[in-house]
Length: 108
Image (cartoon, rainbow, N blue to C red; front, side, top):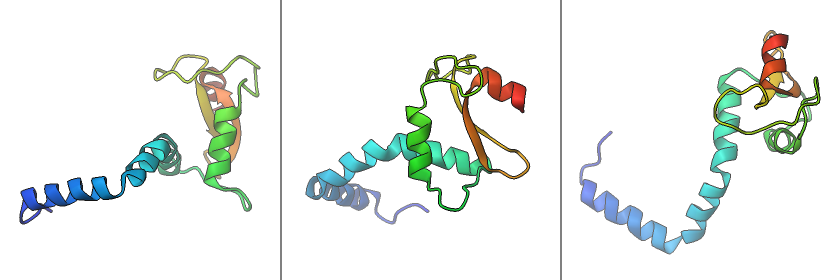
């Protein structure tokens, strides 16, 4: 929905950013995590009881090797064979492992 007075809204946003600079800083710091978790949720990935998205994300980031073939994982944007993937069961939606792209495709 467009704003009634776009210039007034723009000035309000500018003043807000000047008044609360730490909010913008924290927002940008958590943006990659938020985006990744949102993507997982949209893919139908579910958490088991006692799990939370932050701990899953930290586990995902700290996992250095594929849990299937032990290859060193990378964080490239393209789907290379060594790219880090969060593997999940497509029937239940629950997380299984952190795998390389190649192993994740083979497992299905």
